[in-house]
Amino acid sequence: MKNIIKYFPFVAVIALNVLAEGSGFRMRNVQPFVLIIAALLSVNFIFALIFKVKNYFMYGLTGVALIGAISVVVLPDTLGQLYIENVIVGLYLGLFLIAVFPPIFKLEPFTFEFSKKDYPQAVTEGQQFLKINLILNYFWAVLFALGMVLTVITYHSDDAINTIIATLLPIALQIIIGIPITIKLPEYLMQKVGSEQIKFNTVKDMFASMPFGLNKERASGINTVVQFFLTGEEPIIGHLIITNQKCTYNQGEHPNPKTIIRSDSKLWLDISNNEVSGDKAFINKEYQIEGDATIMLKFAELFAPPAKASKIEKVDPVTYNYKHFEPKKIKNIVVFDGGYRSDKNSKTTFMVNHFIDGAKEKGANVEYIKLKDYNIKDCTGCYTCWTKTPGECIFDKSKSLNDDMSVLRKKYREADLVIFSSPLYIFNVTGIMKTFMDRLLPVLQPYMLLNDNGSIMHPDRYPEKGEQGFLVFSAAGFPDVAHNFDGLTGMFRAWDSHNENAHLMGEFYMPASEMIVQPVYKARRELIKDLCIKAGNQIIEKGYIEKDIMNKIQDPLVSKETFQQQADAFWESLDGKKSYMANVPKIN
Ligand SMILES: Cc1cc2nc3c(=O)[nH]c(=O)nc-3n(C[C@H](O)[C@H](O)[C@H](O)COP(=O)(O)O)c2cc1C
Image (cartoon, rainbow, N blue to C red; front, side, top):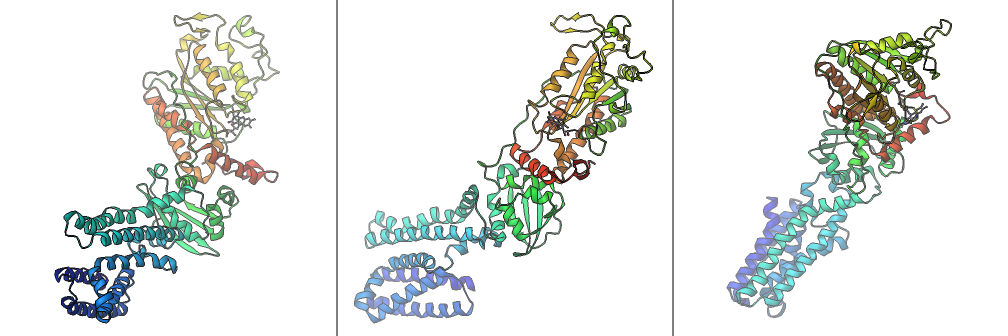
C-alpha cells in the first residue's frame, strides 16, 4: 500500500503529460482530467498522512501537481495554460526543489532513503553518511535542473532528435549515471574518508565508519567476529564481523564471537582516534580482551588506508645449501643450550623444546645440556690439544680445575646431530656458548684439507664416527634478521665449511622474540611451536628440514612501526618500577 501511495504522484504527472499532449494542449479538453487527477492526488496525500509515508518525492510531486491543477482552474488562460504545456518541466522543477530543500532546511536528504539500503543501520546513522548524502542530493539537483533545461528548450518540437534530447536524455542520465552513483558513491567516499585520520566524535560514529575503512588487502584471509562491550559515557554493545575482505558492524551481541573487548567507551574512542596508545592501555590493563587477542595486533593496520598502513617487510628467504642426510639416519641428538633463562622464560629454549618433542615423536634419543650448569674454562690458545696431547685439552688433566669440557666434548662428538642453542647476545651467541665452541678445537686436527672447490678445512679427529649434522637455534629482541643474525650465520656457516664432518642442517632464527608471550602474538607463538615440532619430525624421518619452516620462523609478522610502539609501551610499563622476569608473561 505504502508503495502505491509513494509512486502514485509519478504516475499521475506522467498521465497528465500524456493527456495534455494528446489533447494538443487545449485547456478545455484537459481541464476535466486535471480535476480528476487533482482529486486523486489529494486522496493519495491524505492516505500518505494516515499511513505515515516518509517520502519527499511523494509530497514534492503532489505539491507541484496540485499547484499546477489549481492554476488550471483558477488561472486557466495564463498560468494554467503554461502548466499544461510544460507538465514535464513542472515535474523536473518539483524534483529539483525536492533535492535542494532538505539541505537548506537541514532535513534528511532525499537520497538517504535510497542510498541507505545497502548499509547497516549503524552506518546510516553516522555523520559521515549524512554528509555523503548531502553531496548526493546536490548531484541529483544538478541532474534534475539539467532535465528541466533540456525539456524547456525542445519541448514542443516533433523532431525525433529533439524528442530524444528532451525526454530520453534526461531519463538516461538519471538511470545510467544517477542511480549507480547513488548506490556506489557512499562506499567510495567512506573509503576516502578512511584515508585521512578522521577524528570521531562518538564511538557510534567510529563503528559506523569502520566497515568502509577496511583495508581489503590486509583483511585477506581474516575471518573473525569482535564483540564490544563498552561502558561509561557511551555504553554500546555491538560487534564487528570481518570476513571475505568485508567488515560489517551490528548492534547487539553475537552468539559466537572470537574476541571480546571490554572497555570504557571514552578510552576506546581515544584509542581509535590515536590519542591514547592502545598497546600501552592494554599492557596497563585499562581494557580487557577475552578470547583471541591476536586480532588486536592487526586492528590498526586493518583499518588503515593502503597508503598509510605500515609495511610488514618481507624477510629474505633462506637460500643456504643445508646438508641432507638419509632418512632415519639421525638417532642421537645432543642439545647445548648457551642461554641463562629458564624454560619458562627462554624463547630460544621454547623453540628447541618443541623441536625435541617432534624428534622424540619419531624415535630420537635426546640429551639436553644447559651450559651454564657446567664448568668451562676459556681456551688459552696453547694448542696443546693439537700438539703435545692430540685431542686432549691442557685443562682435561687438571683435577683441581674441575673443568667439564672433556665430558661435553665426548657427548658432542658422539651425537648424530648437535643443536647449538643460544639467545642472540650482541649479534652473536652468548659468551658461554662461544667459550664452549672454542673448547671444541680438540675434536679437529690442525692439518688443512684443501678441496677441489677451493674450500679449506680441518680434518676430523674422529672420522670413524662419521658425518655429523648440526642445527642452530636463536631468539633475538630486534624484529629483523638481516644485520642482526649476521654474526650467527657467519660463524655457523664457517663452522660448516671449515670442519670436515660437521654439517649445517638448518638455522632457526626468531626475531622479535620477546613479544611472543604477549596475548596478541598467540597466533605467532602457536605457529612457531607447530613449525618446530614439524622440523623435529622431519629431521628424523626425512633427514632434512624444509626451508619454508625456517623462513616462517624468521618472519616477525609485524611491521617495524607496530613493533616499536608495542616494545616501547612494554618497556615503559616496567621502566624504573618493575622487574622484567617477574612481570613478563611466561611462555607456554
Ligand atoms: C646482553 C644482551 C645482548 C643482546 N643483544 C641483542 C642483539 O644483538 N640483537 C637482538 O636482536 N637482541 C639482543 N638481545 C635481546 C635478546 O636476544 C632477547 O632478549 C632474546 O629473547 C633472548 O632469548 P632467550 O629468551 O632465549 O634468552 C640482547 C639481550 C641481552 C641480555
